[in-house]
Image 1: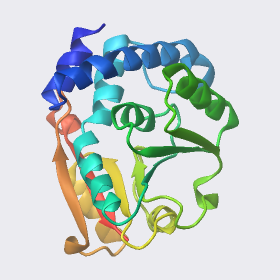
Image 2: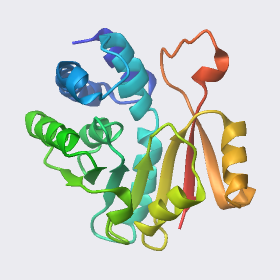
Image 3: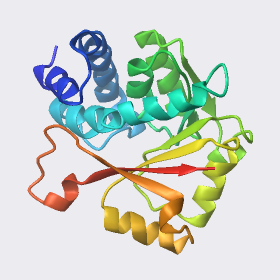
Length: 225
């Protein structure tokens, strides 16, 4: 088991017993990512520690925030569905699903070969709370997802945010992993979102030690429908 991974989870305020449960699952997942990466182009590195920091811990740095959003939804309905939109190699969906087994996750991915990878990972990890949908984001059923999680590293534009919000019922939340706050303000201004209509939550990724300080900045953008 990687000390780096467990130490990172503890720094993210996971209880030790939760970290001990999650770590073996994530180590198995990392093995699968490295095994199939060259064929499916899942992550931008094959280095174990880089995957831990830049992908697993980066995905889980917002776990407590997403759990809080989901708990808010629980007060209004019996079950909550969290969608990882454009899941790719399963980030952040698989780490989140492993960490939050009480919620249902839908991994939305348009490429069938990546969907096969995701289904295989869910089976190997025993994630019974995960469903994979081989569909484009635009074709996701309206109001079928309570919280839409989005980690793709591209700007939020009018078309994308309309697509994401269409998946949500009234009161549903979009939780987008983003980088620099000034870029977020720029993006949201471009799509005519006034300052008070969304929340920017600062995130910290343990051990993310780029020499460029700006590259370390992480934020979660939360938009309520």
